[in-house]
Image (cartoon, rainbow, N blue to C red):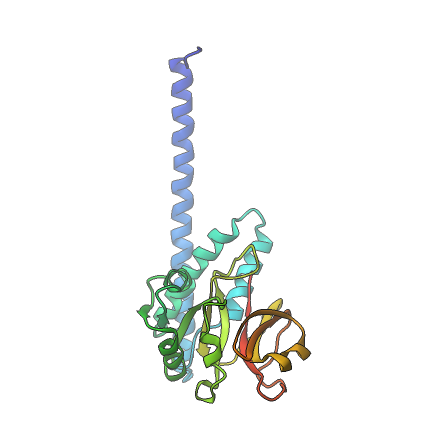
Length: 249
């Protein structure tokens, strides 16, 4: 067995030190750029407040656009890493603009933390309570598990008392299977970002006219997804509800 000579080992240590020095230099530059970005974000927030804009600062379509551009510019960048880093930056910016109230079920809590990190308060509620909170809260986002046979919260959205509450995004934003783990809902209209998925709920027999893929059903109602964007003002058949739209990177 050949043992490394002291000279070779010394050279390897020197190379390792040089690599670490290079990483330290990059870390310093990253810290400078993050501080610069945060300063610009604070300036934007201040400008909005000066103009009297105190509304919902959450812009899911804009976030998806940012990630898509980043990955297009840097194809060697790991998508999941990029999403995690930029989600943290964006969440910190939203917190600086007044913060968000994040409500979630215990099952979906990991995906709420992935989406908003520690920058916003997170409360654990039942799915029904989370939907009501999203309806009533000006800055509230409900993170609920992806609908399946055992998850029927989407049926509640057929009730008129929850009108205006829509799915607007998904978590995680990168899902290799095309199916996220959780959906993010708020009392606002969905925004088109390109390559959007629309969710419709309503009577099973009526929804067949829309085609698409049936995700699940509860009694006489079903939930389907379509590979297109539906504006909230789109005309739908009686009994059909726009649950919302989301996009993945």
